[in-house]
Image (cartoon, rainbow, N blue to C red; front, top):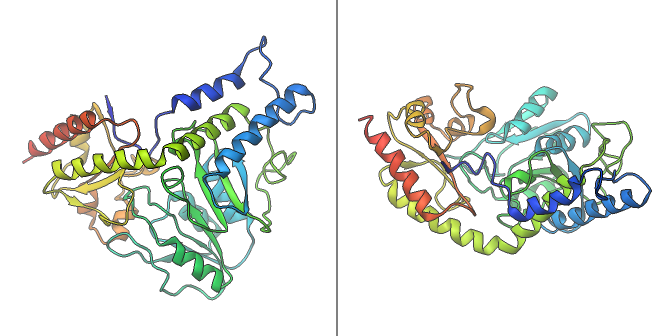
Length: 357
């Protein structure tokens, strides 16, 4: 099988797995302690958690604190629900469901327009009572990179909080400044089941989960030293390999663009993460294509919305018709994708598409 769905999840880095294994020792080991216990084993586990926190924080701006969560979705909920009550929340129309559904549940959202190239610009109106703006740095479906420096400047000038979903950016590029930043381990070759919310110093949040306040008073529940260690190792490796990974992915992108000549690119060609290739071909039956290319793991949209049968809200937000959105595919590649794998997968997809006429 060839894996081309890096936006959904990434392969676990060997270094992350190795870091985790120590903290999964059985009864004969000494590294399975509760990091919130005060005895020696607990302190050892707590030290591992803090080392991981430092390594994750190194990917993020200075002047903030990393709060470990069970996922980026939880981090986003903590940011939105914990940062205050009342007032409107302005969100880009291409945000992840974790943002859109949470704001819809609160009933105080205002959707910001997005251009045809997938860019959401701050030169538009939003309600005067807006307290929070949520804009993602890199879109998970089409890979477009937002002008976060402009959003940060506008939010600061107007005294609004800025939440950045940096799930698809962290570990791949410098993470933009914001008041709160959500990230996920398994999108940077770390383990599933752990994310983090970076919170700017001086910003107070209300906890979502109560019952002990183990994670700096903002998240109750016992932290997993193994998951934290895996996250930290993945973050450290991403920082060390960022330039190398970017060069490799750019080469894959160039080759893929050559091979899929004649297919239409969804989103900006320039302002995007090149590990995300979202393309369409008029009249393409994507369900049939995926069935015929069952040894190639790619996507018709985000993993969270797969199987819904609904056209992508992201593709519709940039002006595509339902028919165009449903004839689009997303190829995601990265650190462990070889050029040979990419070429073999592309040949398979193109041949299957050609057979549809």
